Length: 283
Image 1 (cartoon, helix red, strand yellow):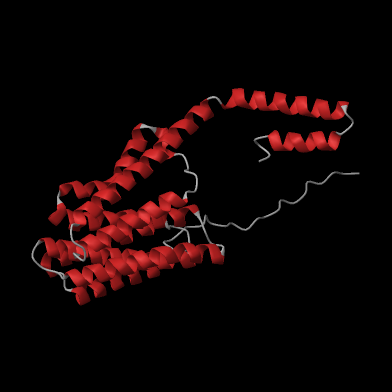
Image 2 (cartoon, rainbow, N blue to C red):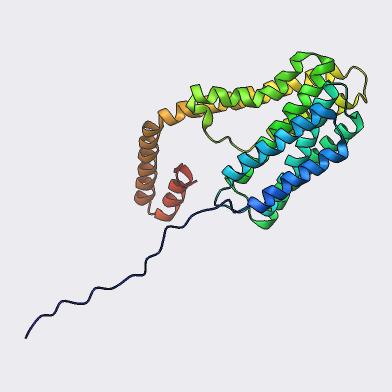
């Protein structure tokens, strides 16, 4: 009996998959919509320069962020908000240089704020919520607030810029303190404070109420409170994470004690249920 060497199995060569900018056409369409919006708004030469630069920068950043990924239904809504924010930025630049129209700025900013409550609902109802989409939404909000704070600071004072700069100061601090990069717990209060910033800045930009500076100062105080609360929570969480192994041992010992009591009394089911309630991992 002779042993024959099996013939080698030939596997067809599959070249590595190259990801392209999967949403390139959509982003290009958004850039074209941005230019069309600028043509309608007519924000002046400075506004056109700012709006054109914004459209190019937004296309580059989003093409890189969504490389190899598809935009979900909620992302399309946020993309509309990006275009509106570009229009607001152009109008602010035009207004600061003697051009632009306040009513157009207020209308575009108001539409962007209204859509801010739409993209989250779309993501939840379609089951397409993602970390990238949430980050996309958050950065769009922050940019709109920054642009509006520049507009209001022109009349109320440079201190208003603290509202728009707060998010970016927090991000810069996270580079020096990595514990600030941890995920925050969901908070209705945080979302409400964020909405208040946009609404108050739009009202102040419209000049619809007297003494709008007081209203903006109150909004800034709320924002400082919100960020301060989150920073304190993250700092406390860092301390707990540092003491995590000790707490895990204590929890394990407590679970063993409860199980032992349940076994002694002949109620293992009740003891196991209590153990699950006391086990932080199970929760």
